[in-house]
Image (cartoon, rainbow, N blue to C red; front, side, top):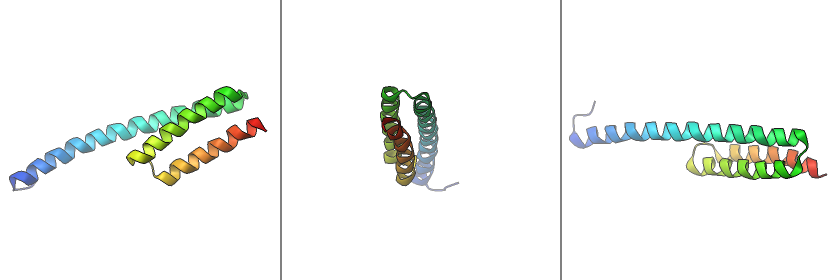
Length: 92
């Protein structure tokens, strides 16, 4: 443990921020997972309009997670691309 008062305060603040970040990261990952699952289900059912709407929601969640640093931006782009290929296959 730190001996200096300001270092002790920084340690307390870091602990609070770590908990907040963990909570946010978990919530974002859950949101992405459920959104992705809904998107893939819509693609599997063949419902084009629903698949497009779910893709849009999933892409937004992935972009938010990437911008906040929860996911790496390349991983978010890869997931969006993978889903876009499936949604676009319905149109063809």
